[in-house]
Image 1 (cartoon, rainbow, N blue to C red):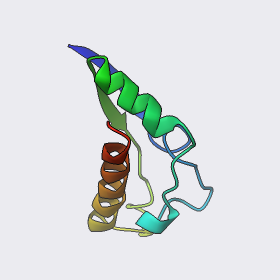
Image 2 (cartoon, rainbow, N blue to C red; image 1 turned 180 degrees about the horizontal axis):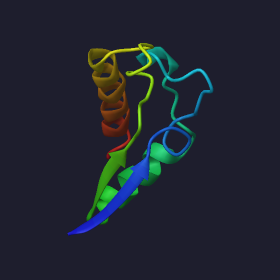
Image 3 (cartoon, rainbow, N blue to C red; image 1 turned 90 degrees about the horizontal axis):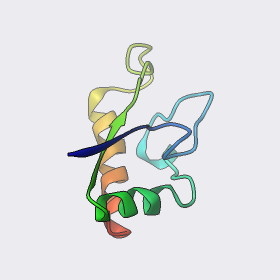
Image 4 (cartoon, one colour; image 1 turned 30 degrees about the horizontal axis):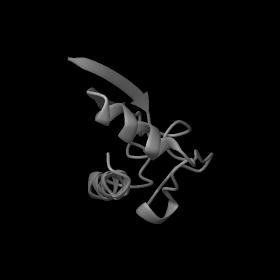
Length: 81
């Protein structure tokens, strides 16, 4: 299996000094989703590794993090990933 592991904030989506706290704040970096889709189409599995310390700080909870990631998955599916 071919595997690519990517960080989330600053690689797939725009980073924020005040954390990505809800799905509306998650904005993909232009071309990032298309690049992931191309990797998938060429037989690579893509995993996302992300340290979300905003959970421990109380800025958002796991349900919100899951909603952010659901938005990311749907956006990726729209570009063929």
